[in-house]
Image (cartoon, rainbow, N blue to C red):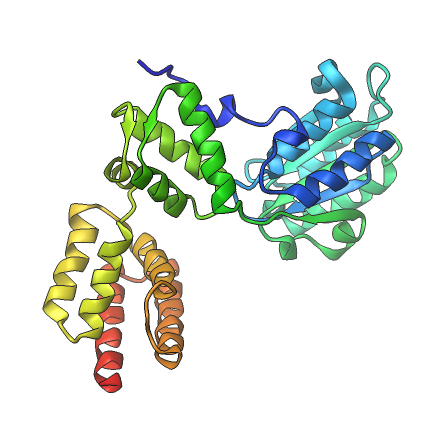
Length: 321
């Protein structure tokens, strides 16, 4: 039996060298560690690309075994009001570092969830206690961080993990855990991950809980993801003008597989770039995909919006002919 533990935590990088897919960022962070100094840092990028891992690795390498004494982590999505900045963050920042450490580190995960008032209060705290404390903030969208904070930080942009890096790490984990990973299973993990290493590892573990041999079907079933060819079939049926068959395929994805409207929209968008469609038609289709995605995100009926998208595809296909 596989151990009942979360692999994403088990295989979290312990050193900066273990962080994959972010060579330039790691190189620049290593220079700070060698200098034994650190500016305020802002990590920006999509989920699962190593932002939190880099923050913890920096603390580990700066402070050694006692790194937790001079490091605190707050998830700003849970505690995002101004009171948290005025109490918890300020109290930690104002105390002197323990041991031989030159400063403490406060890591604010999902900092883009902080309210504007909280960010304004944080700006002053960063400035006042910079001699005894450094801030590392991570966010998905740096545009949601106010300019005064961005100007006080060294900003690092994290990119999605490459397919080659995902493949290498997943093979390594599968080997250690004694899991047999088929070629089509590995390809499915690359597709599901879409540059998110956390999603890739979680997909591998979820499938491995069912069977020691992980194949394509297991990955797609445990991650609630449609096979790329099923999405392509849906698009082709619509462009060929076969509304009822396209609708039946949509029913299969929504009802039989239990996918959400947002999941299907996202996969339709990805499939557009893998199909041979004239650019002019592709532009029109993607424009409508974006509109339908917005409507669903705003609370519109998923079924009606997806069928409206299929109808638009059929009209575009008829005009093309």
